[in-house]
Image (cartoon, rainbow, N blue to C red; front, side, top):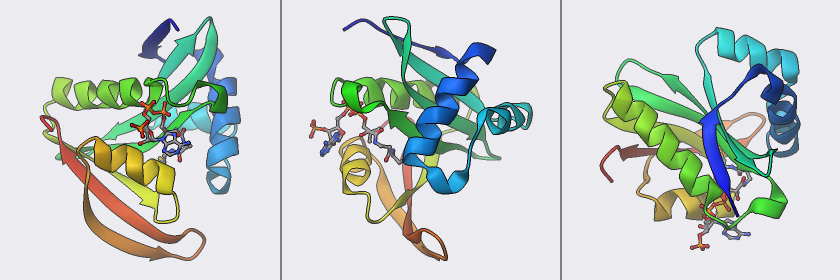
Length: 145
Ligand SMILES: CC(C)(COP(=O)(O)OP(=O)(O)OC[C@H]1O[C@@H](n2cnc3c(N)ncnc32)[C@H](O)[C@@H]1OP(=O)(O)O)[C@@H](O)C(=O)NCCC(=O)NCCS
């Protein structure tokens, strides 16, 4: 399948919001929130397959790290390397901006995502007990992993 990974355009906000609501409902991200986040410095990259949104990653520059807000791939496109391509784009974003590591939060119960991230160089840095999310793990990796 032909996949393109690119920066989001304003026409992508709707599809990003839809995928966010599917996987991250507690974050309550609608199209307006995608735009607000973008205005506050969040960068979204999207994966496009045959003109349709197949996934996204959102990243934000921290003082020393890049924080990944989330990676999501549409169910029909899973396990075709799209999540990996989005992660690689996030790593390139960190490199382009002089940051040497990336961090993210993932629910302890999200076995699929944990497998995905640990297979791709992320290591456990800590854990937080969330009120709404249960236990959330902090994962970190360097840009060279
Ligand atoms: C995690 C996710 C981003 C992976 O995307 P993807 O495009 O399938 O990833 P890739 O094809 O690059 O890599 C596949 C790897 O992801 C994991 N994975 C994906 N689907 C899986 C499934 N159904 N069961 C178990 N592991 C799975 C595995 O580690 C797999 O590697 P393997 O095939 O060698 O076992 C995707 O499953 C997703 O969007 N999940 C829902 C949203 C989410 O939980 N995001 C992470 C929290 S921020």
